[in-house]
Image 1: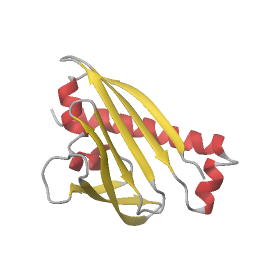
Image 2: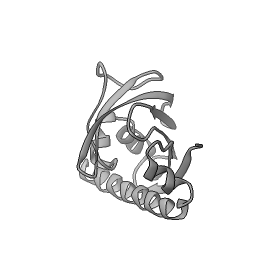
Image 3: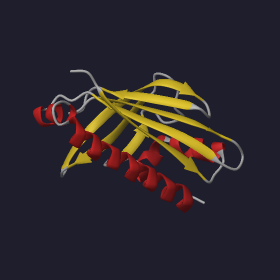
Length: 152
């Protein structure tokens, strides 16, 4: 089955540098990405293409250790990573732009469903799946805004 892609665009009242520093620092995922905790770069340090990211994803009371590989990294503008070892493989792409006073982010998640229910939600029941996924992305952006404000 082909992937199902969901995307959201958001504006922020902070500089591009501040937004980029926050979203590209892997442990900060725990503050805004739904269900993520214990996120870190294997071996520490900053991310680069090929870096391995690990974290715990908790969904419906079940925790699963996930590993992601950084596929793209362009400082202050783009990062993407891919997961293939979890119950639902996915690719995340974050594009940032802006200046010293405001910034924008495009946040895209592509899911490659493997479980029967997920295949239904991304196939015949796609309108319902889209509503759920888009709501989750909006919530993550709201959490990101709050986390950026709290980090001041």
